[in-house]
Amino acid sequence: MNYSFSFLPKYLPYFVDGAVVTVLISFLVVFFGVIIGTIMALCKLSKNVVLKTIANVYIEILRGTPMLLQLSIAFVIVKLTAPTITMGVLKIDFSLLLTGVIALSMNSGAYVAEIIRGGINAVNIGQNEAASSLGLRPTQTMRYVILPQAARNVLPALGNEFITVIKDSSLLAGFGVFELYYGTKAVTTVTYQSLTPLLFAGLFYFVMTFITSRLLKILEKKLEKGYSK
Image (tube, rainbow, N blue to C red; front, side, top):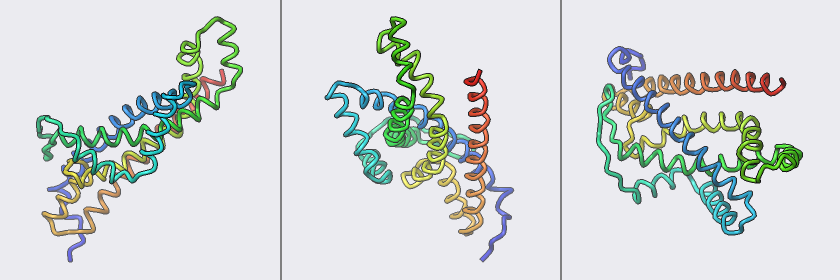
């Protein structure tokens, strides 16, 4: 069996284009996941019993069931009509892509909700009292005082969530979404090489997560400097 990397000159675009789609999916999932997570965190911290119950049920279900199962349900239930476009060597079916992004975002939102809730609780209670003494309403206090400070607290955890999403997006390949792992499987099928394309894909995933973690470290240091001032 041939374990060389002789396939690279011809099939490198499958990995490059797949990696671009993977990063795009990850950005979208984290973006919408933060929105969902913020809403769920605020609902969970709310004194309204209905909102708190909805948030608790949502978080427990999404965190307590396998992501693969959630994706399977989403691809059965969600019926979207969207065009198919060509991106390099990949033909991206946006109906599949959007379904995958929705399902992953809902899952990510459940985890982000707990991250943000912890970040809000970590803000000194004196901040609430100071804001109240200045005449700010509770909603204004949350928006202008608590959430900005909580964002600094949760940045490392959100960075880890982004890295996790980059890796978990490979699950979408099983549902026909053209991303890095899907492109890798296409190469293994065409070249009849089972190991080397997977190793090369692993290198791509490592580079993406490594660069992301380093960029987040730089951002954290800048925020710490700004906060110390």
